[in-house]
Image 1 (tube, rainbow, N blue to C red):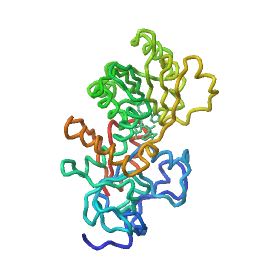
Image 2: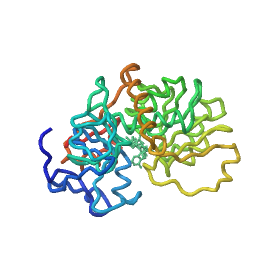
Image 3: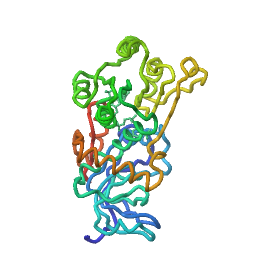
Image 4: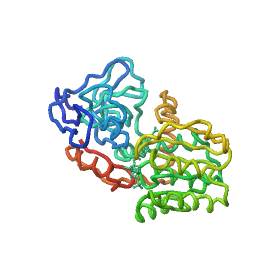
Length: 333
Ligand code: NDP
């Protein structure tokens, strides 16, 4: 491994706001790995919609300045004390951690694992956070069974395309929503049985269509990541004793609701996060191994929208927030 510089390129914010607060810099101090951490030299950094929430302040950044980014892949440049034996200098790894929009990231070992030889460094970064989100949703939030009708919003996005493939592979029947005909076509190619639009003016029609497709019953589970704009319509689509899983806020945070609304159909309501499904290294490894199998054995498609140079972070961010993208966006430091 080449020697580690003192300063690095990266993207940070000094205050929350629009894309104008994103600062690409070349003078950010390289972090030192502490006990139980490794320093990763990033080759690919994943963009996730959550990065937007930290930038806008929907989720308050824990410190300022704050380096955005939650996942990446690359090689280990150095190790802090007390790291597990499967991690050593030059090991190719994928990880989930904060401060990934940079050349180097200090990563807690709980969320850092070696990449199998059969998976490229690019694919690992593209698959990790969004693939694990989809996988834990269908295994834990609502353990999906063969034949279940399931509704997914933002179906052509990063998590969405994973849900399309995984739901198909477990034999579910998926109703997918996306905003454009091209996105809906893509969702179908990736496994959706029925595709619907869900613009504001069509929302009642959208509920009607879901009920009609499911013989008037509604779906066994909804996986909704759009949030504020779609929550109410989605709740109407859940069948008796079904599950409403709200796992994102792309259109804004869901308004508080009276829990008595759930009793009309005995609905189970969840608001899960991936990090609580893979809180231990064993859990992270377990689901990652399952994800690698889906890619290598089941040939699931890791759809990469574009690999942007790190300095083009504003363009990449405007693309995902402007609903112009499908699948995964990566940054290359
Ligand atoms: P996506 O690639 O799915 O991009 C977001 C998509 O949301 C857009 O493409 C768009 O699809 C849709 N959307 C709907 N309304 C809006 C709006 N008002 N503004 C912008 N986009 C909108 O992102 P990710 O795959 O990274 O994440 C998907 C969702 O999953 C996010 O809400 C994210 O927060 C959530 N998530 C939650 C996790 C958890 O642990 N709970 C973990 C990972 C992701 P369209 O144009 O088709 O409507």
